[in-house]
Length: 319
Image (cartoon, rainbow, N blue to C red; front, side, top):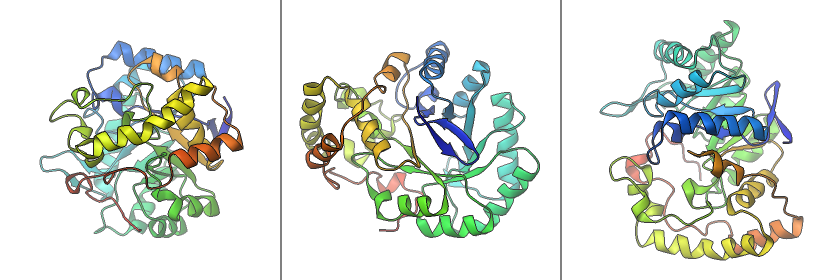
């Protein structure tokens, strides 16, 4: 697998998002997650992305039990509750990091994200906390998630940011309106989460029956409720046909499109199974193919917002 820059490190151009190891999108088990991690390593994926809230520590625990060498990124800042809240204070960040390191069975992580920015805490204070953790050898670099370009600029001026992690895919294009450009300008990696549209760009179109009521994020997400859901399935079907006609996997083609949007972009798709992971690899569209994909799925084609009001706490919107 080709590599891309993540701060001072070189990592595989595709990372592995480990949110699903915590059961967020359906039942899984430790053995299946361990097989997925093995398959990722065999494919040349070297960065594993997790968070303390994924399964309330389950995802980090699985990665810790796996125990193989990898570039590990984790996050803090979301307080699960109830009620759910955001905490960007230094004591909370430090306490969460120690808990994550214990679960991961590590004395440091290569990348530590602020999962959400609390607007009541100046981002310069967050950057200062992260800078001290870097100086202490606890983390290799820090990142920010779901932020706007102006927040990145302020944090980066205080202490260089390693990575920004925001949603980006064929159906979520907001980062094109300034954030991708700002990351490139500042030399910051852009880590694209949900690059497969939370399962919409899998090999088979999802159905509402696939979503677990009360647990699965998609159950109440605007893009996955009717009438939006049916409209989105229909809009993506011509893209599926395009992939089938070329003998390409749908997920591999969607990832190839994301990768083609900039060499500073690292997508982190997630999966619960090693078999699905193999679908991501070995799709190499031409410039003409990419242009056709853009015609089939133009910016703004998706029906519904990417978050409902109940899901958008501390998500920075700038357009």
